[in-house]
Length: 198
Image 1 (cartoon, rainbow, N blue to C red):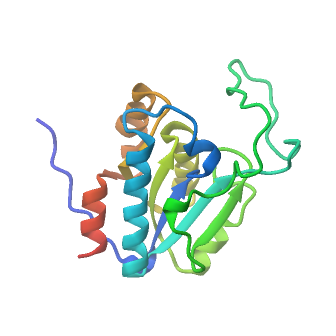
Image 2 (tube, rainbow, N blue to C red):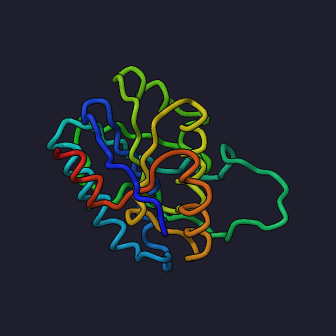
């Protein structure tokens, strides 16, 4: 018998909706499990629209950098990330479905996580934001890496489970079932929308 989860309560003006890597180059790569990328994009767009309507802070994170990749992480690994070849000029551009607004915070990162080497922590703290609702692609890479850093910095975390997707259903399930519940609260898009509009 599963334990009932407590209701999530959000104070919008203390909350950031952090969307990870919904950019043309990543959103356009086939795949995603257990949720399709269009489904994830739709749920992220709904969360951003609710944030703007209630006074929560949208934060749009994308990955990019120097054309030659010299400012990216280069270490020896047992399993290299899949090479994408030469990247098109718009690879790092945010997708239009996010409806970027002038008041949105936009963070350019150069690795999986959105905190290291960026001013994300500064931008959140100066706005008095203590809670992060996190979503995007991919669950086990950009989302999890950012979440781990946020947890270690003392932010309250809420994971929008159906507004993120992994490279495989198994890797998504591992993050959702084993990692994220130890760092915060895992909820559906509908539950988070209800909390923002309460």
